[in-house]
Image (cartoon, rainbow, N blue to C red; front, side, top):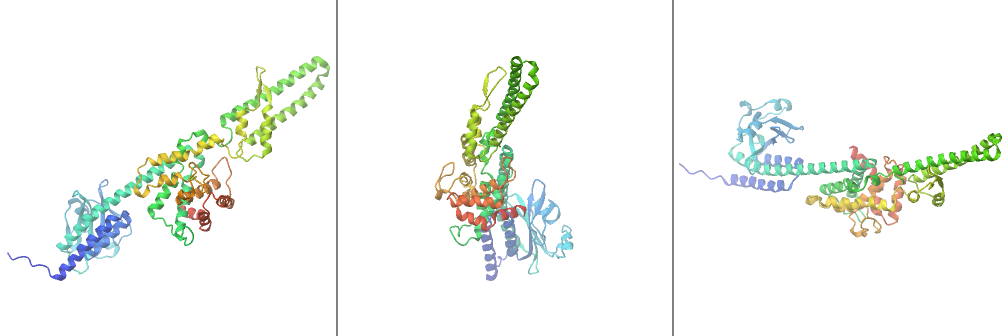
Length: 504
């Protein structure tokens, strides 16, 4: 038997070039985790390696026993076909190479695609992609060798080698997608948990995330100032988005009555207060009838009409005053900013008394109620405000327990600092300006803007857009918020951009 003739130098050079190309694409594939970018890359290299006009790649879906492809060249739609059906299906089922010099001469070839697309398939090479365990994970199919000749054994060998590398890269990309879906599902479930605890702020986390990401994207167009070189990669934007969506998760650790407190007195406290006023009203009526009886004994029954008229007039005045006090208390109970004079009047009401059913004198307003009604701003006492503020600590402890990937490892840190101020007056750590991440600075602006403009809060009216910007501007000028980021927030029209991105 004669020894095999070695390939001519030009053929050797061409083969070496193809092997080098496979090595190069292997490096590229190992670095790419986005399946939508990886699959076209594999097809492009496969077409070059075997010098084919077109290539298609099908991934095996074991649960459905189907092959699927989003990157069949010449098709814009996802293709699905049963394992065992057609050439690609048979290769997936058997794991054997199919090499057809003339596709139309083989009954396994399905001419439907050619008929629909107007394409004329001549030669076909379809090889299995095998993972490290040797299991078939998909197939690569090449159509029509550019030279017009059939695909040869060298093409089979090279496409098999590329398919083996592609199988590993696709498996890693699919695993990466599964991890992303897992994180997305976890974050979505966490947001549902937050909003179920505090339904009055439903949608807040999502809106803050949209605003913060929109601001981060706006930085791409900034060419001057301290943020001229600040750019965020896709994974960094994902990190910002997760931190924003989860920035209030610690509210699950705050007592629900405090979390949803819409007025200065809790509902049960207001119920007790109203009951006291009802008793005081009955006491006024009882005292009036006692005075009538005493007056009749003193002045005689013949003066009863005059006595009734006097007492009716007095009773009306006393009840009117009682009603005015109750209305004033109800006004103080709302989350409005009180004038200084109202505080003084509240403390004067401390002296109002009525008699209970045992003729014991009772205060009309309790000291703790006066203390709560005297809250100057909002509905929370200092103790309650500290409890609400503790949600940031809860958020950080919770997020720190999650084994984030390397690209998402700063999510806890970013969320932790969203209530910090540049002048050191923020909470919970009052950290100095240089240690506050830019992502947290952006989130602070987004968080305050949405809290001001939200229309779903039962305890306050929505602030108009321009007024919200004025409030943010005052805080930026006061050194609490980042003035440069606030300028970008306005000039880039971040609220409008976030709404557009959300709808788009």
